[in-house]
Length: 559
Image 1 (tube, one colour):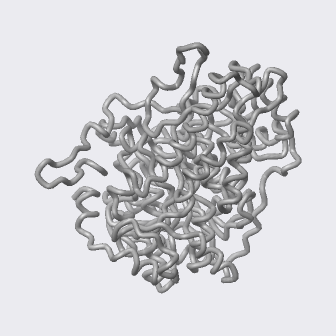
Image 2: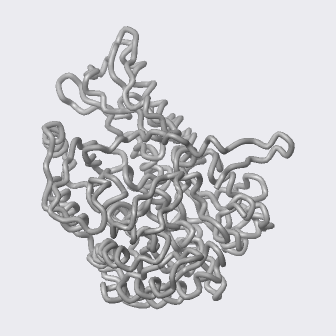
Image 3: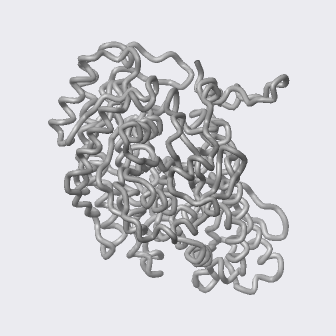
């Protein structure tokens, strides 16, 4: 049975009932039909004095291109905690249309552990991504309109750094030549990796949203002076477009557990976490909050610790690292995996040699999270035919590497019941002291921060900067951005910048091709060589199989 059919077989509860059981008032819910709603920020004000629940990050090892079930495990864990009598909420990122129509095919979990309604979550949901794109591109239009009407701010056309945004993957838009009186090269980024999406995810409320939008760096004047969105008189209109998008979206899992789905993914390019507001509301309503960060510990988790926790002031109690046998065997040389091709036997069948070698990848991710002072639980997302002795071997090695617990999870096939052991392990981990500490201080220089990430988190030997990046680092430092955190943009398929380097590589040097100033979001993005901010579609996009059934009017082909 497909994920879509499993989703359709569930009879979800009215969202008003889910909200009521979460402790939200009727006036704090803005319904979007029967099964989804936005949560008014007034709820956060009312619940401000309520004690916070336990805060648990869900991250992973370096995945295969198919993904290793991080979202499925997070959902299953939330359901398992509810089954054991603990009020829990899972806070997830809204899937991007780019991967949804490209390689991934969906981002709502899978099997018996999904967020409902899966069609809505995977497509438009409540329109937040479209609001972000509209807000972002409004500023782009204001920039070009400013040039057309005389350029009173003396913007240098060659030094405009503000791109345009698009919600689907399209490699043709990476560079576009604008025609007309002012010819220049334009760039597009995918919406979920745009600065406006980052601002939405990190804003503490309407006032902070408006302030951050005004701070966006549009470009530089001919005299080198930075020009911001506020000077173009566009930030207010951008905020108006985002008014409703600022409120988190309330949904439910396939077992009726509350889920808050808000802001975008792309942990390899952007900071890749759900919104601070969603987490804060959840922490006031639940005993346990499971929040997801993109890809592995060296990407989403590192950015969660260094960016999101810095801004929110929240401190995680524990972290879950999701691993699968097939990904570990891939890192151990068990075979190549190509999207659309049958899985090689070396990844799906017994292969102790590849598994043993690949466990170095898991060990590195455990070391990454424990370096931040956070207790680690390893969740082994088990597939139906995984050899039991290999699953047990991974448990033993995880404990030896420093995890406080390692549990086998089968949420895809069994829902919350399949994450019972994992839930017990997470509760025990949360009872331990968490001494969360960032790996670098605000006062460190830009290069010192990048060096800390690539050496301590990636395991690299060093960093090399292109001339463009060197110049941009000097500019960022001169403008006072040396105190903000770093958001690295690199491949998720390896601990390194090179997707072909599997396992736990060492001795490599990370090349940085550019540094982008995201003044409104409040961080700098260091882009590794080979990374594109606008992805392309694969040879056989998943979108080829998605359609509208002419007889039933139902969407088909989603997974």
